[in-house]
Length: 156
Image (cartoon, helix red, strand yellow):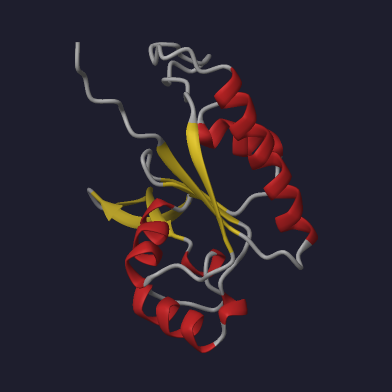
């Protein structure tokens, strides 16, 4: 019987071969890709301890190129967000309300917004923080170098 095969999810590592942190993340991601390939059973219903679907085999893209403007927009949308607490007056009393603000400066040095980030990255590619791991299918991005955090982010 004929059936369509599912395409593999793509995870991209924006890499800088001259950076020890980037080389370490490259090794972690290479190991993760090999592990996912070896343990993929074709059954995607396995779940991890927090109830998230475990990742099966994926395609690992390694690139030293800068992201395109659309990719940068997605990365800025995906990147971990830092909760900030802002004082608001509610019912005559000051209360602190959690506000989530994107950490654009963690992706592109000194950037204040998406357009500024793109201009700074184009002016100097070193302004773009690498390593940057992007899981396009799950909408996640991270520049951390901790193996456990990366494994959790990609679902292994």
